[in-house]
Image (cartoon, rainbow, N blue to C red; front, side, top):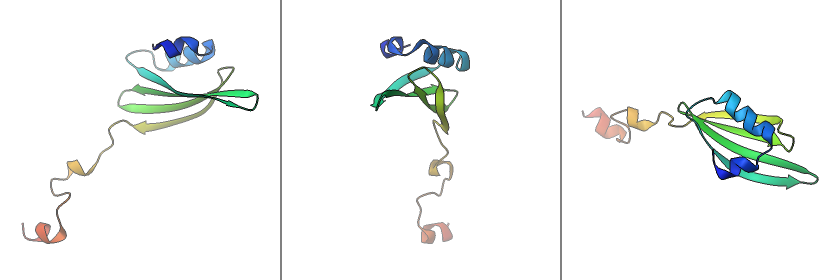
Length: 90
């Protein structure tokens, strides 16, 4: 856990440790005050996924988005990046 994790509301730390039990990394992306409310944006990396989590000041999860850490890309296709003409004449 990072030193920033020590400053999070206990309920957020509990959520992270309960849902991401082993071998995870997390980073507090931002702590924003919106009027009288505080919002925490946290990214957690585990099992080739990145979880974007938003919590309120009490530690309640407001939003969760998940994306692949290493999405499939054109490198999987040996002909990616070739022009159509190059591909036709192979």
